[in-house]
Structure formats: C-alpha cells, structure tokens
Amino acid sequence: MARTENELKSFIDDEKIFSLLEQGKNSSKEEILEIIQKSLSKQRLEPIETAKLLNVEDKELLDEIFKAANTLKEEIYGDRIVFFAPLYIGNKCINNCKYCGFQRDNTAIERKTLTLEELREQVKILESKGHKRLILVYGEHPDYDADFIAQTMRTVYDTKNKNGEIRRVNINAAPMEVEDYKKLKEAGIGTFQIFQETYHHETYQYLHPQGDMKGDYSYRLYGLDRAMEAGIDDVGIGALFGLYDWRFEVMGLLFHAIHLEEKFGVGPHTISFPRIEPALNNEYYNQTQYKVSDDDFKKIVAILRLSVPYTGMILTARETKEVRKEIIPYGISQIDAGSRIGIGGYTLDTLVPTKEQFQLGDTRELDDVVREMSEMNFLSSFCTACYRSGRTGEDFMCIAKPGDIQHFCAANGILTFKEYLIDYASPQTKIMGEKMIEKELEKIGKESPNRRELIENKIKLIEQGQRDVYI
Ligand code: SAM
Ligand code: SF4
Image (cartoon, rainbow, N blue to C red; front, top):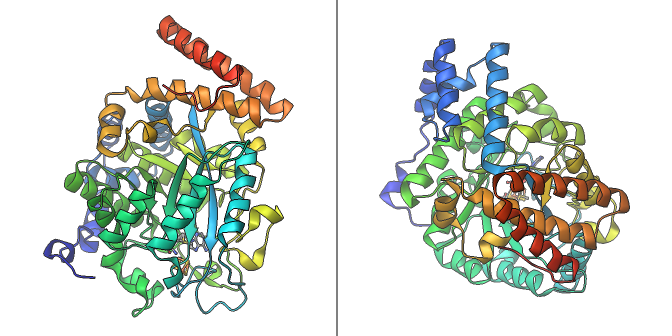
C-alpha cells in the first residue's frame, strides 16, 4: 500500500468543501439561471457553481433545475435507459462497516460464496430473463482476490446458452493494486466500481474502524486511479447517501470526477448515489441523522446531472418503484431490474433476508420494469456495443461529447430492445415495446431517412433470427 506524494495531498479537502458551500449561499436568481445555461451548453460545472445550485431553495428556481436536468438527459442520452442486474458472488467480509449487513460482526447473516457451478446456474437464470449486463458484487475477503474475481468473470462470459449470453461484466469489489486490476482487465472487465461511501474524512473514520482494510480513506479514494493506471478505461464512483450531509457528498463526487478528468483526460464512466437501506441485525439505518428525503434525493440527481453532463448515472432497485418512476427523468441513464441480492437469490427467486446485504425497494421482474419504461416513453436498451467496438474511456468521451453517441446508441438501443422483445418479453410488454420502437424510428426518420432505413434493415436481420446485431 505504498503512497505517492500526490496521493497524500488528497483532492478532497473538507475545509474547502465547507467553504464553497458557504460561499454558494444567497446567489441571485440571475446567477443560478446562468449556471443552468452553462449546463445546458453541456459544460461540466465548477465546484462553486455546483455549490450554488446545492443551496437553491426557491421553488421556481428548483423547477428550472429539474426542467434543465430533464432536457440535458434527453439531449445527451435520448429516451434510452440501459438495464443491468447485480449478482452477489459472496458475502464473507473482514470489515466492519457500521451500516452494512455483511459486516464481520453480524452473526445473523449466513455466509456463503457461490461455487462456479452455482454461479453458472445464476447466470443462466439471468440470461433466460433477457439480461446482457451484470455487475458482480463481492464482500472484502482474502477468498475474493483478483484471481478469484477474474475466474468468476470468465465463468460468467463462458456461460452461454440458447437463451443468450452476458456481454458485459462490471465489478463492485474492494480496491486493489495495479497488478491485480490488470488481471481483471485481461478477463474482460467493463466498469470497476468503488463507492467512497462518504467523502467526509471524520465520518469515514467513524464508520470504518481503523485497522480494517477499509479503514484507510486514502487507499480507497485512489482505488480507481490505480484501476485506470492498470488500463481499465471505465470506472464508477459513488457515495452512500445517508452517512453524512448530502450537499457535502455531492461536492465530493464532483471533486472526484474532476480529479479523474484532470489526471486521465476522462472522468468517471458512471456515478452511483445509493441511499442507505435497513440491513438485517443492523441498527445504523435507525441511528443516522443524515437520511435523505425523497425531495432532496431528487435535487441530488438533478444537480449531479447538471454538474457532469456526460457521466452515466445509475439508480438502483434499492429505491421503490414510485421513487424510481419519479426520479428517472431527471438524469438517470442506467437502472437494474428483477434484482435479487441474496447469495444464490436468483435460483430461489424469492427474498432471502439472511443472505442479503440490505433490503431492496423495487423487487419487480425485469419484464414489468421494461413495460413501465415503454409506458413512460423510455426505450429499454440492453446495448453493450461500445465496449465491444473499443469505444470506451477516452474514446467513448470523444464520441459522446459532440453528441455523436446519440446516433450509435439510438440505433443499438433499438436493436437490442428488439432482440429482447422477440426473445423474452411477455405479450403485453411486446405490444408496448413495439409501439416504443416505432416512435423512435419515426423520430430518427424525420432527421435522417437513411439512418432509419439502415436500422430497419438491421431489425429485419433480427427478425430472421440473427442476434447481437449492432452498428
Ligand atoms: N465490499 C465492497 C465494498 O465495500 O466496496 C463491495 C461491495 S459492497 C457489498 C457494495 C456497496 O453496498 C457499498 O459500497 C455500499 O455503498 C453499499 N451498501 C452497504 N450497506 C448498505 C446499506 N445498508 N444500504 C444501502 N447500500 C449499502
Ligand atoms: Fe464488507 Fe463492503 Fe459491507 Fe463494508 S460495505 S461490510 S466492506 S461488504
């Protein structure tokens, strides 16, 4: 765990964040509208600008923020929502994070690691529902070293059956060393995610006991730098909301994004903003004074959308279906669905509290959520084309920034959705989904009849039985 000089001079300075949040108070209406305009021109905001937005309480101005977040989402991501599923591989853990059901002192949790055979079984079930992207989740434990993680990744990619295949495997695991990340790169990793949990140093130290692996704030903070140094192009940052003041955490996420952008020429691929949930035999949820209300949660999502226009934003099934429906239009680009977070939870197809990390809010099946997205005029996408065409990291941003991403993603979103509708959807979802595809084609056709024709030709190939068709 050697530290470079740079790492010791952290890019998260608590005092600076407090001071910016203080300076951000009492901005004029004109100043706020100007910041919103800057976001709409798709420029990343400076910390003082985000701090000003975080202090807005005037209802009319808040409505302007929400409206702009919605516009920006549409302009950059179109109507698409990308789907994925979490797959928990093992819940053994050597850490004692105060808020987590997997903490080592929790004797009520049944400890379990999937065998490779059990893993294959889980993957086949997920494939049979139509999933193409997974995020594999691990506790922190010597059993879950880079070799093991790489082996589980390879097993997932190799588990192909007539129902389809997983085309992108993302990882959420403890931070590691550069040499270890390289093993994951070799195994074909998509995104490596690490949530800092809280960016506030003192709170971090309180929640993650010193002496634990996770007790080292700085090692975790620079965990994604090491991943990028190892050649992993896409990294995901996140904060667990409910541990400390939400305004501070949004500033922490922004500083983290800026740091990666400045150091590697490209910011994080995604941002996650889980809210704390109750966990089995764990009282922290009832004790924390920082729980985020639904109204504030909506502000968090909209202000992040405005602050980092080109970063993907993930909303998980921790949230209830009502909250998800309300929040998605303000900037979300990825959601999970049909999720089970017990170890082996997909086989049992039921909730297993003694093996779960926390409680999920939205336990509907993938098909139900896909149908709801069509009803809301969102196009469900299972696209993984960029990664397989080498459009990741900086390359992805080069395409994404001028807005070209729209063309690839709109087409590939439609093509993967068509595959889903033919292979997996219920009759009702199929009807809604086909209507949604028709609406998208009409929109594209108005802009470019040629592009519509190109996509329609590819759709024909799918109807004739070809799969994994993308441009
Ligand atoms: N063990 C690894 C780690 O801590 O980084 C990776 C997996 S951990 C199971 C994934 C994430 O779950 C954590 O980073 C944390 O943000 C989140 N989490 C933990 N306890 C939670 C709770 N009670 N409610 C919601 N999310 C929680
Ligand atoms: Fe272990 Fe991660 Fe849970 Fe902490 S958050 S107890 S490291 S699984």
